[in-house]
Image (cartoon, rainbow, N blue to C red; front, side, top):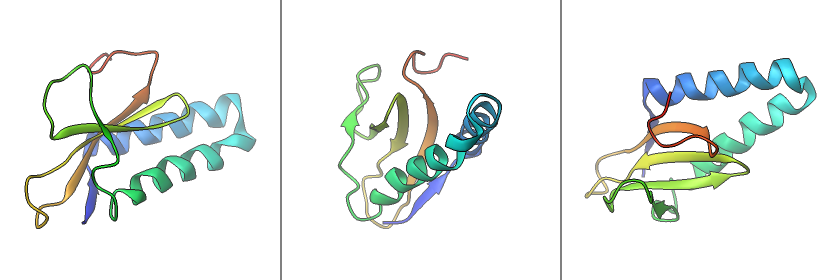
Length: 97
């Protein structure tokens, strides 16, 4: 299946990158690459994520990388792409700014 990033998810990943550039520059590339690698797995294994506990919708799922939640929309049909909705630190609630 094809995977696409929403503008919000792209913004989230950029914010994570900016944060690590400030606090741990040597780790920045690793964390961003690993998040992207986890997302890439969805192309072949779209159902590996669990249903988001905060939302009771079987099509809204998440995969975890370290302390980050990668939330995505799993479409009903394989012709529609998987959409990465947001990426955020697990210390925050879903939808929290």
